[in-house]
Amino acid sequence: MSIAKTYAGIPKEYASFDNAKILLIPVPYDGTSTWQKGADKGPEAFLEASNNMELYDIETNTEVYKKGIYLTEPITENSTPEAMVEAVYLHTKKQLITNKFVTLFGGEHSISIGAIRAFNENFSDLTVLQIDAHADLRSSYEGTKYNHACALHEANQQTNLVQVGIRSMDSSERNYINKENVFYAHEMVTDDYWMDNAIESMTQNVYITFDLDAFDPSILLATGTPEPGGLLWYETLDFLKQVFKEKNVVGFDIVELCPNKHSKASDFLAAKLYYKMLSYKFLPSHQDDDDQNNKIIKTKEIKKNLKFQDEYND
Image (cartoon, rainbow, N blue to C red):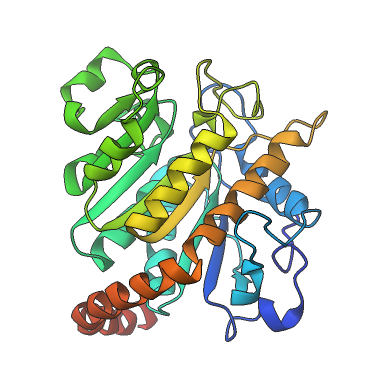
């Protein structure tokens, strides 16, 4: 697999680690998906589409790449689901110590287990906002708790999990779901206040895990398990913009792009979504509040992080 050397072909001055405020970690993993394979090709397709994307965002009147976006080496551990999750956890934890804004692009949804574990250790009172077609709350599936169908089970136990866009689940998952924090797609259609209610369910620190099958297949078909009745583009952006404005989004991942060789439209949507989320995060009016929040959080966590760094380097 050939992963690009820089994100979106941005100039070297914005692509270096030292100058970057943003880190992008590719995780080309597809070890447990159970229908259409190909999510391991997602990061490569996403980066190729990003290379062909305009870097000026009309809506926000910004060029967020000038904040600096460093593309790390991909996490290629794929021997077992358990080993992959551990590798993602360790690498994410290591990058969080740099005090940069850490993002990931998968790969199947199980890559989020390790990422969320690292963020939850680094940020207090964390909300995980899951935007997804599937509940992903099984305790185990096909012999492992690190299956893509279990991607949010641990987060549901250890963080404040808010689920948006859900329209497919197994009956066993009803034992785990928090009814107050789940926003089903069929109810969202007639609820003018679902965005406000979802945001009210969140704590101040929010990590977003965005499964691309949250979108309706009419606008994004290239995913492993497409489900009818999904989100559309502008309502999704309206919601994300409001989340970034009202909460301290500490990081995010995007997963489950399963490229279709006959059409690049889904790849390009994923590329635009990633860039839009960064544009919302780094709007000047949002950043002032986030910098103050992060200063307080980092002061509390610095000793723990330094201890982890010593242990990791050993």
